[in-house]
Length: 328
Ligand code: SAM
Image (cartoon, rainbow, N blue to C red; front, side):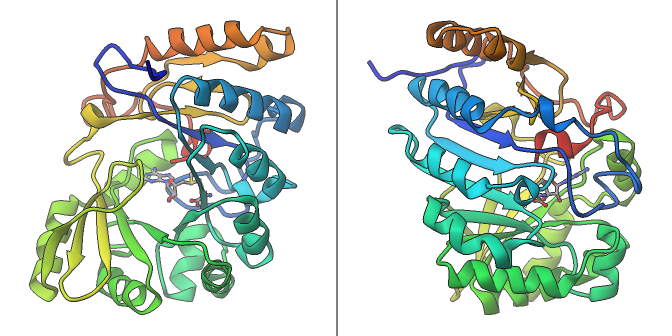
């Protein structure tokens, strides 16, 4: 029998998102407060040996997709080494990365060689000044150059993640569609989530992506599409082109019934739902010498506690942690 991890709602868990640090070299308005420094100390980060051990256990239980995320994963030194180690796990089939792109020019080649196949890059604006305002001083040119480096390194598909904010960047969605068409990127539009005070503040710019989809339908001929990947986006394609546009709608139309993932934080907490607090602390167990069978038993018991759904709409004040703790 194939190993598998199934939760009480009959969802198969096949995907782990690994946050390798909660630190970031940008300060996006909806994610981390300006001047925020209350980060996990590096001694508390899981080491590469510990991450590999946890992911090995997961892959022996049926997980075959892993995404490296953060914080900003490219700020963790020697990330390609970790990528190579995870990619060598026999059951792992899909290793991907989420990044803000700032350091991609330097690292895209090494990441590709290490076995990262595809990447998601956050990009909320194509206007330098607006980009700097949203990201707390980020340089758009650097990210665009990083994206070029990703293509040159053969990372494919490159998915652009755009958090859509009413009155902030929603006037740029068509520009972003054209940019992705030109660059052969996939575009994913994301609704703001009320995570931490920052996410809650940004939710005042919340825009239902169904409205955006109807707007886009007036400008482009959109047909239903599918896209490989383990995530929750629902895709359309611009007819006659290769461009796919994904809609990630945690607020207007949640997708919890198809959730297939759990998240490991940089300090080794296994979060069972992005929008709930249930977690299991693995770091102490690893450092106390838990056996491989014990680790797998702990993972099974954790998955048995996976919440049915988030409550971003019903309880928007519930989640105080910032997105940088668990990655998206
Ligand atoms: N630094 C990497 C990046 O920029 O993709 C990975 C971590 S970042 C936390 C992952 C994703 O979460 C990004 O696409 C970011 O835009 C998104 N994000 C952060 N806070 C959010 C919020 N409150 N609502 C919606 N998306 C959010």
